Length: 325
Image 1 (spheres, helix red, strand yellow):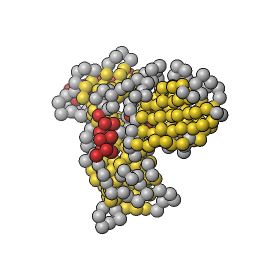
Image 2 (cartoon, one colour; image 1 turned 45 degrees about the horizontal axis):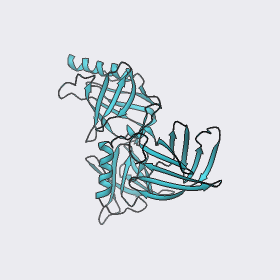
Image 3 (tube, rainbow, N blue to C red; image 1 turned 90 degrees about the vertical axis):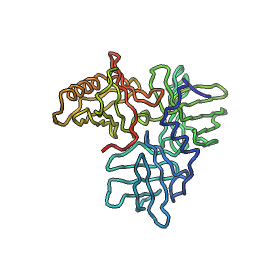
Image 4 (cartoon, rainbow, N blue to C red; image 1 turned 60 degrees about the vertical axis):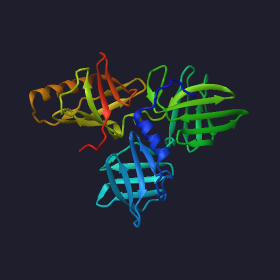
């Protein structure tokens, strides 16, 4: 296994791979042969409707019917009567919008983002892949970059492998969709990578880090080891354009988040002004105070979201199995 640091697959990732291996769906024109995509943390399926040009968009506990629409390229489907819900797909990638919310780029099992970036440390190196064209900043030589045309030699539901020959050298680049942790900064990424240059191997991590957090409603189950009040609800949703929103116990909140190679932080949120029982209001204040102190976010061994503060307190949340209202 070509891993920088081996971490177990999250429950979410394992579920996606299981679906890809076991399910078979009718092909929908212009879309992936699999009919399945992962949009960040959201798994979706596109299925045809017998005797109709409508297609079914299935996600969580929902099935939405979409109608073909005119597109310059690829296949575009829109929800009748709801212009803010649509799916555009072309081959192994797609774009999903649900009621105006844009999700991370949707990928069929094993596919990589249209602009895929990976990095390695000790020594430092980086690659950027777009349309089978690699921009390589070599190990030991970060001052210069090279443009390399890649040949895709392996494509399966686990990842991709590319090869190239340039300047008399042989290059191989492998991508595996398994949680990866950078040894230097401790940042997590959705893919593990291995770069081989003339037989010398360099390990690294790659992919868009936001894909680990976005596309799910995270339901908080513990605040700094004290649990939460029975039948109360605290949620966190990472949205597009660096926005975050959810329920704080009594009130809804919205704000921003910043995800870097060094950690995760939140901007002060705006909240609604409802009043609830004192215990709920106290829990809400505790949650919002902890959120303001968060310095790191990561995915745990069981697929849970762990938000840690500078003082060592942790907010623990799990993916909701249904769509938020």
